[in-house]
Image 1 (tube, rainbow, N blue to C red):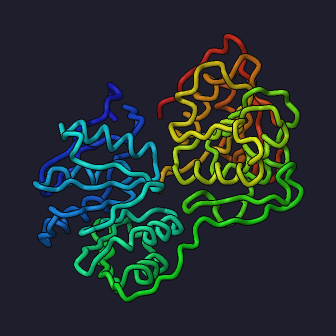
Image 2: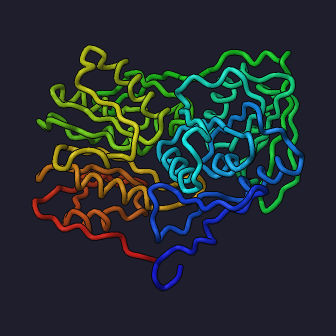
Length: 406
């Protein structure tokens, strides 16, 4: 990073066979050195050009993380791709990257993983996700639109493509092989076999929760594919559930980064009169939270709000009494505290004076330091050898400071 803390535009520029595009993540941060594209995106685009793939038909791109593939493809004459994403943030980045190129609104169609997919696909491009379950779900949903001539190409970094990944393509699409690795990236090349019988899509799944975790003990949780720890309760959330505040009298509680909604649903059971806001940037997660809530609190649907977006960014200031949060510390393959910091600052703004933020996290992450800088206080609620639960109280007149630059 240069001395003015401004990003080098060339570092965020992706050169493609059809020209260069400048890309950013969302929300854009001039200090962010993480690019909106990687070698896997560049490899796939080169492959399409070098093989002369016809891109004038129905092109569908799945899991384009920040819009690199979709933005590049709109530069191909006659190509108007459909982009399917589970990430609200990724879709916002895609929209801004497309606008930066001057592409018209009709240049691409943006769909979520919860939308009905196209009924015909001539070229299917898959950015292999971190979640094998999400890949399985999406291939099940898209397979009926394939035909014998459909070109299917997946892409990812070598560390993202495993034998299980290839087996999944083989089982759901047809004969599959991989390319040679280039710059630690690899392609997955599949040929549709319409005679395959892939069976039913196993997602969503339901399972019973263990005892000893408060109001949700023994109850059922619903998980759509791709949601964190979709087939079992993760140990951090389990620890938080066992120590959640009860009968707080809170009028409005936010489950920030709600995942499958088990934390917010537990809060609804503990505070029956409270309105619960479930929010996550994943469409699959919010669908899971809505299903989990309906499973356990379906008699009071009017007391819950389900919102896909950038956390609490759009929540009016000083309107929330309690925020519950288990923040992620990864963005795809990158380890970063940027998401946690953004969640904490959003919670600070959304809370009323006297309102509380409860956070669970690994001990080594040092969240107590961030909370003290932001809220002016941090209290240890509970701990075990791996996790801590922290509480920070919004004080009237608390002065917020930004994260230190590295």
